[in-house]
Amino acid sequence: MTHYDIHSIRADFPILKTKVNGYPLVYLDNGATTQKPQSVINAITDYYTQINSNVHRGVHHLSQLATDAYEVTRRKLSEFINAAQDYEVILTNGTTHSINLVAHCYGKQFVKEGDEIIISAMEHHSNIVPWQMLCEEQGAKLRVVPINDEGELDMGAYHAMLNERVKLVSITYVSNTLGTLNPIKEITKLAHDHGIPVLVDGAQAIQHLHVDVQALDVDFFAFSGHKMYGPTGVGVLYGKEKWLDQMPPYQGGGDMIKEVRFEKTIYNELPFKFEAGTPNIEAGICLGAAVDYIKTIGLSQIALYETELLKYATKALSEIDQIRFIGTAKEKSSVISFLVNGAHPYDVGVILDKLGIAVRTGHHCTQPLMERFGIPGTVRASIAMYNTKEEIDLLVSAVKRAASMLL
Amino acid sequence: MVDMTIKEIQDELIEDFSFFEDWMAKYEYIIQLGKELPLIDESHKVDDLLIKGCQSRVWLHAQYVDDKVFFTADSDAIITKGLVSLMIKVLSGQRAEDIVSADLYFIDEIGLKEHLSPTRANGLVAMVKQMKLYALALNAKR
Image (cartoon, rainbow over all chains, first blue to last red; front, side):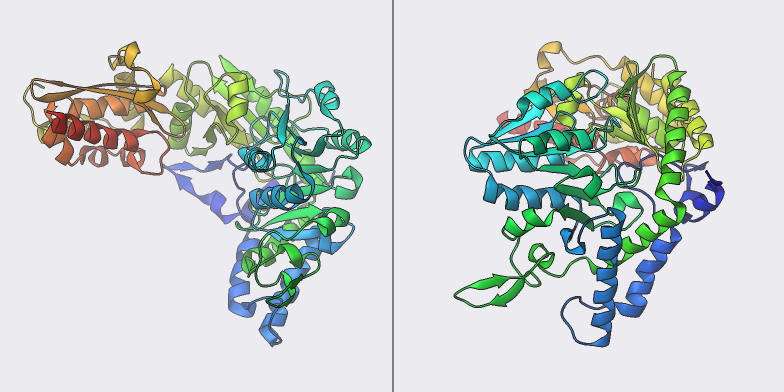
């Protein structure tokens, strides 16, 4: 491993110099959203000062520049996840949008009464509710793969659930609450053995580990730009061409049509069939800058560094009396959820905030999971490429201080 | 605090808090209040009396005694409970019309404004609203 220059990386993120309540900001809410490097911030300004224009429409100079830049991002994203074709990369406004698109378009086409959809007990609400809505509409059934006390999927139960009624498996790569890293390759292989396609919620994976959609052989892969150091309001739905081709469009409008007549409209080709209306052009283009940034640092370097930091944090926090970790899977990535005996996560979060430490508290949009563990919520520290051991030490001492005040 | 007005109680709390030198002392006091708040009668800790914040939950009960509204409350989070306790100090035992029209400026003055932000997911804003609604309803019923 070459030298991972944490100081120079931190210097790339201007917001990290912020003081909160007189303390240096310790930003450990990266699972919610990551901070942006200067190159992404500059790209936003550059876009508006140099090429702002609508895409895929005008013949004029600026429109061509904006369209090219937007399509360059698609290319970069396609390379980043190793899609077979650039047009398999649909630009959406985020993971939630991507999942809803599949629930709506794939669902309408392929899910009928009596069919089943499989999700897991550790899904984010975004990967639960769209399927519930679909099941209700189509008279299908939602099946939930259980997890063990460590927060790992019960693969035996999953295997047993696969049958000819199942029309889709939709599972998260990394749990936003537990940090569990799920065996997506195995999950996909098992589903494919039964001819069932798989959607992966990659919102908490894309910024931490190398994703190769062809190697994983997943049918759909969804993620958000803002969790991978890019702007909010843009995300991706990767889908295999064979599925995307068979799915009807999501929304109707501009860009998604080839020809409109009152008698009949001919839809556009991929990817535009799923991209109705003016997209978030600025965010789309600047997500390209975020991909460039990640590639400059190197995803494998980032993964090594973060794994080390996660180990360090887990060990350091475990030395606190009365701490209880929620999510102790063998394979984990970037997230530590915990409770300090008897203290409500909200209270801990308030004290940590007073000490300049940003964590997330609450149910993390995974209420069924909280119910599974019988808790109101957790305190969640989620790390990114710019966090340091020193910051983890500050977190540990702040949690100790909160515990001494609250208990 | 018998017969003190809502304004007088608020001013007294503002003075109390002015002695705290930093946020730690302030929060330690709030946490203490939270621990001391007489618990709501268990029979009142039901869903009907639950105010749902996103993260912490508050139970609030109101009753009318001798022309005045008395509140009891509880929360599953201790800091929220301490803040609830402050609200009860200010509003409980007051006349319904005074509660309805009360301007709760003390929260801002003692530097806890962030907890009353409508986007703060602790149920406190909803609680104040609910206290006023109870007062309004009890007043109307009378």
